[in-house]
Image (cartoon, rainbow, N blue to C red; front, side, top):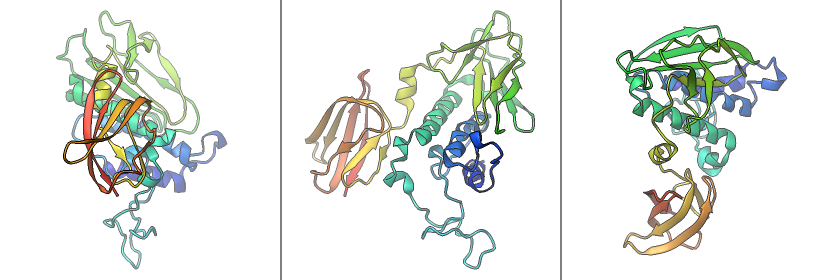
Length: 296
């Protein structure tokens, strides 16, 4: 599963379908745009998963990349370099600040949050598929009809828009299905809808009820990450921030940022000495998290 998620984008860049200039899979941004759908059909299936080597940010290096940046495919004279330390462009290129890569991270975080916290994902599932339009039904018949008990995941891995059959199960009292990627629960589709037009590379995940996870739950459950870390001058984090405090190892406040900061905004600590620091962030809802930061 991990190699599939990782290798797919690299193989897409080399061998992807380029027949549609408007959705050329060999184009990096197009390949990145398809990674959310890969996560949707992989991460939601009941059972443990592992994400390897920044696939959640669209790592596009080959698994056979050597530590000097060359690529040795299996059978090469120098070995395949599969276990070599890989280049780490995600730090110096600030991938969380790249909208295309950040979307993968955000979408996968939402999918994982649903998978972990909604009981239906501990149930059963079936997989049916057109050649390029897989469908996954996740369900738990022991859950009441008034709760989230049926989930449908649809994806389109073609290079043009496809008409996808929804075939929503008939559940008493259910007249609408909810788009579970919308944590507000306000995006719905009629239960009588028989098909939808799904753009190339996109996915939909519908439930018979809205998710019980609200926006604050989702934001709180996201891991707090710092990029780059270690840092020389500026860093960014994956959260919206209203207050960020930097403490040294004695607990002394050495720097503070106050204001309306969005995730990916830079924070300059170039004037601080080389050391280990503790970051404490507060969002607009008053929720707090902390993490470590190494200053070079």
